[in-house]
Amino acid sequence: MGDAVWSIVHAERAALIDDLENLNDERWDEASLCEDWSVHDVAAHLVSSARTTRLGFVVDLARARFDFHRQNARGVERERGASPQETLERLRQVASRRSTPPGPVDSRLVEQVVHGEDIRRPLGLTRFYPKEAVVRSLRLQARTPAFFGGAKELVARARLTATDADVSCGDGPEVRGPTLPLLLAISGRRVALDYLDGPGLDELAAVI
Image 1 (cartoon, rainbow, N blue to C red):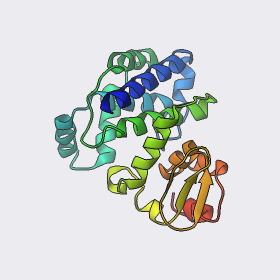
Image 2 (image 1 turned 90 degrees about the vertical axis):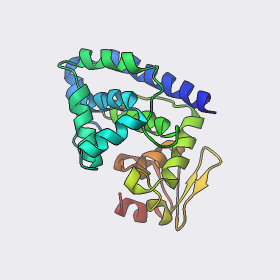
Image 3 (image 1 turned 120 degrees about the vertical axis):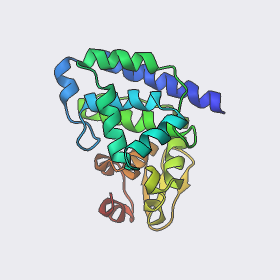
Image 4 (image 1 turned 30 degrees about the horizontal axis):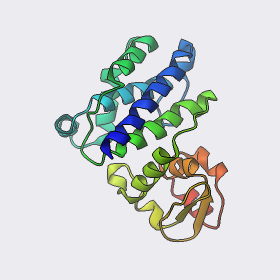
């Protein structure tokens, strides 16, 4: 199963590189869906994440005094090139890597899908992700505690039901919609709420 997941991750990295190759430099400065980060910043984060090993993650986290936000900011600063083309070349160089921080390998799917949308949606770009990638990402986010970047506590307050796949998770009033908006919503991207409905939608909107 690990090989299959990595094949999807590598394909998603290649697809994002193709999209970024068609951008002029000014568009790299546009705000992404990831708070306080530009498109360029998110691309640099993806380079940093792809380079991160299990041991390297622990060392970097300790240096950041166990502050995940500080650790991520340092990674962006380290991997953001002097120009978009330099960052893009760094992304090409890491596209086939299999290194990963501690945790399930499915976290690499979450990284590529969610951050792929952080970049694409503000730019008006559309990507039809493999359904398996989105479903596995949604399930992982739903069972991962917030401390580790997940939404376990959030989905304890609302039941997520996908309308395009056989997946349902969480407790409480129902929120319905396609898997991708569900994933983005529980990952804190409020733009996805417009694609969801159900009696639990207000509850979900109040906590993201």
